[in-house]
Every structure is written in C-alpha cells, then in structure tokens.
Image (cartoon, rainbow, N blue to C red; front, side, top):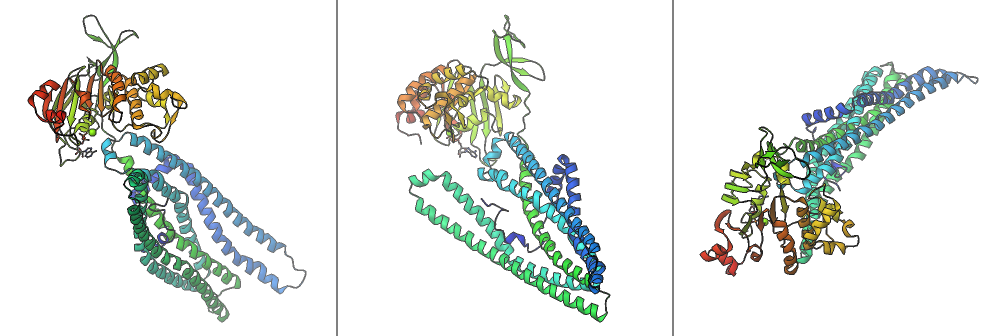
Length: 636
Ligand SMILES: Nc1ncnc2c1ncn2[C@@H]1O[C@H](COP(=O)(O)OP(=O)(O)O)[C@@H](O)[C@H]1O
Ligand SMILES: [Mg+2]
C-alpha cells in the first residue's frame, strides 16, 4: 500500500522549493539512534567519507595517470616498460576497492541501525499505547493509528537507511569534486557552474508544476485507501443494502481523481530525467571544447590529463547534485511521519493518581481486618498505601450527583445519583443513547467525571488504582471482544491465574460448556478474527464465562444477553443468577422481563434519572417504566 510518502516515484523527487526540515524531530531521531548505536554511527560516517572521497580520487588520479604515465609512453617506441603504468593502475584499483569496501560497510551497518531502531520504536509505541486513555482512541481512527506502524515506520526506515547516508555522501562528494575542479582549472569550473545553474533552474521550474500535483496525488491516495478500507470493513452492510453499485461509483470517482493527479505529477517528473540527461551531455561537449581551446591557445596551462580528469569530474557532479534535492525532500516527508510517531510517544499516558489497591486480608474475631492471611481465611480488602488502613471489599457503589460529557460542550449525564448497596441488583433502563453504557464507563474510570463523585466502598474511585478498580469489576459488554487464541485462554482472560478446572466450571455455569464441547477441538479450538466462527450469542456466553472466572464483587452486564435467543437466555439466566448471587450488579437489558426482579430500577432519559424504584413501585406510578413495560412505548 502506498500511503503518504510512499506514493508516486516521480513527483517527490523534484521539490519546487527546498522542503522545510523539521529540525526538532530530526535532532530527536538522531539522538535516539545515537544513544544506542554510537560506535556504529561513527564508523558509518567515516565509511561514507571514505567512499565518497574514493569516487572523487579516482577521477583526480586519472590526470596523473595520463600526464605522468601514458603521455610520456606515447612518444617512446617499442620496448617501452609498462611496469610503472601497471603500478599506477594498481594504485587506482586500490582506491576504488577501498571505496567499494567503505560503501558496503556503511550500508551494511545502516541496515542493523535502522532495523534495530525500528524495532525499538515499534516496541515503545505499542507499550506506550497500552497506557493511553480510552478518550485517545475515541478521537482517532484506527486507520490513522495503524499507519503509524506501517507507512510512517516504513518511510522512517527509508530515510535512515538511504536518504540520510546518501545526502551526507552527496554533500561530501559535491564539495570534494568542486575543490578538485577548482584545483584543475578555474575557467572550466565557471563553465560547469553556469551549466549546473541552468539545469537547476529548469528542474525547479518543472518541479514547481509537479509539486502541487504531487500534493494532490498524496491526498487522493489517502482518500482512496480510506474508502477501500471502509468498504472492506462494511462489506456486509454494503451487500445487505445492495449498495454495491453506489460503492463502485464512488470508488470510480475517487480513482479517477487519483489517476488525474498522479498522471500530472508523474508527467512532469518523467520529462525531467531525459532533459537533465541531455543537458549534461551538452555540458560535457562544451567543457571539452572550451578546455581544448584553452589548452591549444595557451590561455591556460591545461594538460591532456587535466582535461580528461575534469571531464570525468563534471560528469560525476550531476548525480549527487540531483540526489541532494531528492534526498532532502524524502527526509522532509519522512520527518512528517516521524513526528506523528513522536506525537504518539509524547501523548501523556492516562494519569493514575490512585494509591489504594486490593489486598488479601484476614478478618479477626472482633471484626477488624489484619493485613496478612493464610490460605484458609482470606478476604479481599482495599489497602490505603498512604495511611496503611484496610477497608473491606464489599461492593458498595455510589454515584453522587454525577455530571459527565464526552466533549466539553454537551453533557451526556446530568445529576445522576445511584446507591448500589452490596449484593443488590440495579437495573438501568432507558432508550438507546440515554446514557446507560456511559454510566458503566464511568464506574470503570474510562473517563473522568465533569462533576460529582463515585464511591466504591466509601472510597472515591479516583483514589483507587485503575488496574485494581477494574480487577474488582466484572464487565460483560454487548459487543464482545474475543482474542485470537483458544476458547480456554479467552475465558481465562478474566483471571490469568485461573486453573483449567476453574475455567471449565465457569463455562458450565455460563451454560457455554455445551456448545464449546461440540466445537472441533473443544476448549482448545482456536478463535480467529474475534471469534467470527461463533454466533454472537455464543460469543456472549464466552464473555459471561470470562466474567464468572474473574469472580468480582461487582458486575456490570451491559446488554450481556441481548444476542442470545429467549430459550437459551432462560437457561443462561440460571447461570447468571448464580453469578449474580451475593454480588452488586448493574444490569442493562432491553428485555424488561430480565430485570423485573431487580432491587432497584433506574429509568434514564437523556442522561437524567427520571424514575427509580422496584418493579412494583414503578408500575404503580404508571410513568415511563410502566409505559415501556406495558408496551405503550417501545424501547428504540
Ligand atoms: N465515545 C463517545 N464519544 C462521544 N459521544 C459518545 C461516546 N459514546 C457515547 N456517546 C454519546 O453519549 C450518549 C449516551 O450514549 P450511551 O451511554 O452509549 O447510551 P446507551 O444508553 O444506549 O448505552 C449518546 O448520545 C452517544 O452518542
Ligand atoms: Mg449502551
């Protein structure tokens, strides 16, 4: 896939003006590489110097070869000794050979440097990403995040292995050639400078034309790729709504735009090469004529060797000069990607100022908690790391006047207060978008409140470490997420140290055992692509089993059984009831029959609690719940 920076090979090679280099990002990248590869980098730079100088030295040596060896030999008759010439040629071969070895050395080292740097960057990015808030992921498309690992790291690799070394080598070569030219003949140097200037002028004129098309091409590539990705993800919806033709039409429009822009960008770029080639031949001829004239007329003391060597130099200067512009542009592009990578790394991890964690404790006879436990009498407790106090883990969750909005402008929850006593079942009821899932997101601390408090066993949840808080909550969501692994491991995900027996027991309790044992490899069956080979209901059963294994005091069931048929649900319900016994449960369900027996039903409407009470109480007041229950209003 070609993404930003990976696109058309023509356009970007010829910038209309010198690209802006992001010096800060560049310095940071170099520092990063230098830290790990100090010695390698020093060797690389030295090898680049040797390799560029060797290529120039070859051309300079040509002069000595002709003037001191070949010309004197020309006048002598037969019997001339070739030994000195061969010796000189050997020296020249040695110079070129050292250039080859140096080139090999730095390229080989750069592969190690760049691949290791990439590995480090990928590792750091991924582990850093794990610490970022849900909010961060909310506001970015998956495609954007993915491209950090694909396009951006790839352009970074190209820059480190090719562009930067080539750029350094080009600068050294051009400087060396220029000095060598000046030393040979200042008159001829002027000729070359004039011709080079005109070449650069023409190429920048052409590049200015292709520059804007090139930007348009990159944008079109992004739009086309984005569309393809969306259509692949939504293929089922596309086919269900027979949207295919519209999809094809839109794609053709995008593709046409890509074609036009790519064509224009590359048209100019492709003209450039042959033009440059021809101009450099003209330059060669002019230098030869001027040089010959100067020498013959005696205006300048030019020997045959000097002219030959100069011609060779003037041919070799074109390539590095053209390359410098190309490499500079490639570096600028890659730095934009590198900056995106650094931006991710700079993204502040979710702050967690919690200092209260879960611990094992023993309840002594007078009811107080002791911070140690032997295996028989352990209970869970919250331990305040600052004060050393212990609070029993009971599962009492209170929301006090909670206000919350995903964005600052709109509040999704307003003045929500819920008191979920230990072991009680709290049902949240309300239309889609009322804010039910949002409440569970807050209990989980996925987001911070705008106002109000949430307490867990009397402790403000902001003071509880996020990981520990989440460990004490079992969450079963509507859109289950299964990982590419065996069924066994997917259930064990609830508690990593659960034994196989515990996993099995949980699966039985969730009523998942029946279908799992009918899978080809039972509990060892591999699930791919988030468990696409299972029905949605089966996936939910697995995630219920996952919550059972975790054995938390507080459960959140967000439409946990919505995709299970009524018959299976009745069976699962037994397991669920067993699961819920003795725990505080927040249950969200569309089928009101499943929440009838809740201790407290909270009816939400546009982020406010409008009614609260048990089934009988709410039926009696004949409000919203009554309307929903009796079917006067349908949910959704
Ligand atoms: N990640 C999010 N970013 C912005 N708005 C959101 C996000 N999730 C939900 N919302 C909005 O918050 C409101 C409540 O959503 P939610 O709590 O999911 O409703 P439900 O009661 O159906 O579970 C909706 O208007 C929804 O559009
Ligand atoms: Mg919801």
